[in-house]
Image (cartoon, rainbow over all chains, first blue to last red; front, side, top):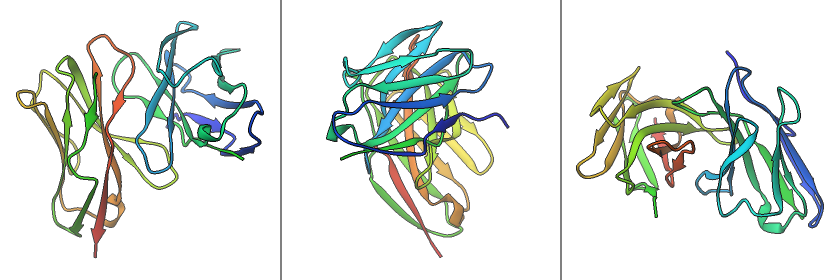
Length: 112
Length: 112
């Protein structure tokens, strides 16, 4: 069964450092997403990406965040200068056209 | 603003009993609803979805009910098993929107 894969599974970084989280969405999907989940809280929308551009973003997704689909398979989330409050699980998701989002297993980011 | 929330943060049931997890949503323009299951340390996993033109949809051991009049969504799990222990999230999507908005989540615990 096709799945969304994410790397790394866990990254520890110092405050102020840049972090790149990587995702390989399901190959024929057209819509790509990043969500985050602070420990014990709900899953929060960050950004959606379609047709090689951001289609929607939340208030959380400020200038410190960026996304890129550099080739036909990878979808990355970059945080330029991490803050303590960026510590969370980051989930990548993809969707074919309409219907459910398929989520990866997440990348845990710990900012010290 | 739009929001999706859950009535109860925790629910404990006996193994073999039926479980009912509830969800209230506030965006009357939502036309798609979905339930996800999240096990510890994993990404959200699709359970069942329903569109606004339906009131009920059944899957294997699960049923989703949608009451648009009172903007209420519920997930029924029949004959709960230990493997059903997880956090359950409802999510909704507005007409023409791409993102899913998640509720707070309900932790379901199955007692032996």
